[in-house]
Length: 285
Image (cartoon, rainbow, N blue to C red; front, top):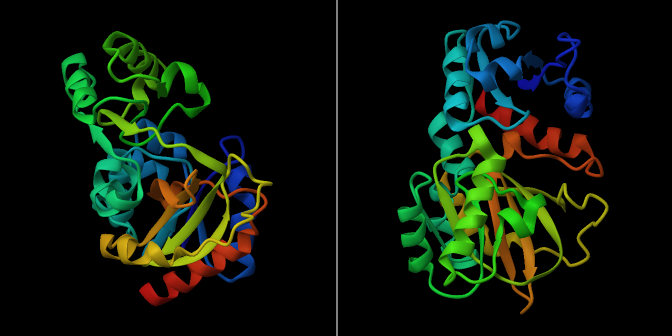
């Protein structure tokens, strides 16, 4: 089955953001069930959050982002109902947090270093380890990219106080959602819009625009072949890999994320994604 967040005001209906995918699943004959995302995200009552899920089966979640520990709560609550998430909590964390996937993609993504925790001393050590030049900042799971100049871009890693001001602002914006520690990634100059590729069991199932630029369909043919030998060994059931064209012409990995919580642009036909997921569920059952 596919699990979707319920509409907070109409709990028997899927959240509007995922309604098109839920409709595509019904049309394809794939069972769906609704979960209470707010209860999951708060950690207050995961058992009640999945009360509407009928017992037994294999499931894929398609919903709002969850911290790795909250996803584990979801998995445990479902397991008590004899429902198994196709992506285990360990694999979700590996995809959702950069330290889990970076080493496998090191050769095709910007050089990165990270801290555990949000202390200044660890941040400065990471900053010095990356060396001079410019960098972009995020935490283990997400950036504050819509606040580029104040909370993401570090023009000069050698200027420790200025870099720490960016880090402090990231902490303020992420608040309780700050995850793991700081990640410093060497700045690379990209051209054009990002491309989102969708991978199921190590195979590229779909290529389309990034949600930030939904109308910018890829103008260059994206040959995902160079990624397959790197993504497949990760053993992750369902992920997205966002790509951007480097100024020198190479495709570079901007981000890998768990596909269950990766947004689908409205310009991408929901049935294309749901059909691919349906095949994977059929093979798992």
